[in-house]
Length: 376
Image (cartoon, rainbow, N blue to C red; front, top):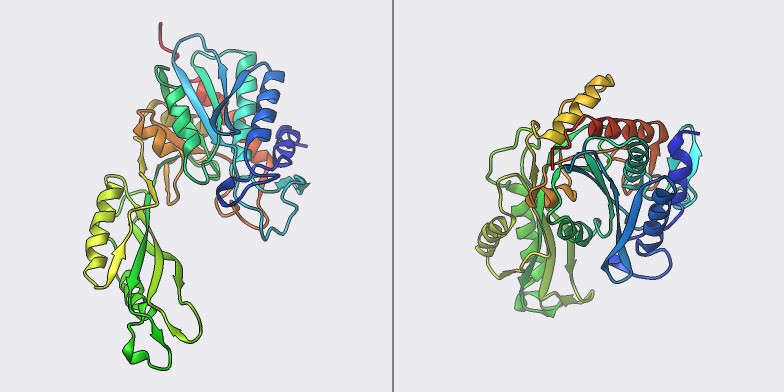
């Protein structure tokens, strides 16, 4: 078994479903946070739990370096729900070198790689120190990383590696998003006399068609391509013999670096509102894009480590969002990196190659060792 197998099997075996959609056994990150803290302590890494939300702590560990400067290794403890999975979500089954289960690649695999790297670095302290953070609530409202940012105030962090399944490719850019609800306001009536009513579903069909036919009017990004906008949910109708008086859709607009999500929403509100009989609610999700210069110390060091290992070292962009954008906005240049494929994340048969987890650990340790710790 790969060195990561026992560690990752234990982590996957502890359910940590984000309680965004419910509560009860298996929801919340406390149990896996305690396991991570204990494993790190057993491997010479000082770690502690810091509660962010009631019963939901981040775990934060420190590997002191010879200099004061620190590198942040951050990944998340929570997973999405397990409904519809075709493998046992918590068995951590290993087959043909892959470990299966919820969170295997998103993002307990990357977190396991960071833990292995931290243990190796603690045994032979590097020039730059390490802060390792496993955070809560990445899959919902980002409260874990926001709490972490508060805890890092005053800490000289040179940059961050954020653990997500990138296929061991360094990603220095990703899209942001703004999500909001659009409502058409018709006039309800009896379905036998539709001409006396105003059908909100019919009105919404025109809105959906408009969104489908138009694209955001912004130049594409060299790593991310175009901004996008799509309808993700529809709610309308009251019964089979009632003309609906209202209909709602949720819209997901993916933003590019340089776009302010709230400005995007204001423009969309004006554009869609001009179609008539429409309300556009304030956003229920707002997240900024990431665009870290590839020449920043941590991304550059990671690319050098990849190149030395004979791996592709070209930086990439990703369409999905991560905690990295919040860290970057707090002044911590961040690169997203980890084992596993985003195609496996949240999937019915989620899995990760254990050899890639071990390789990620070695690459992260090499990255940290190459960085200057600065002087006090």
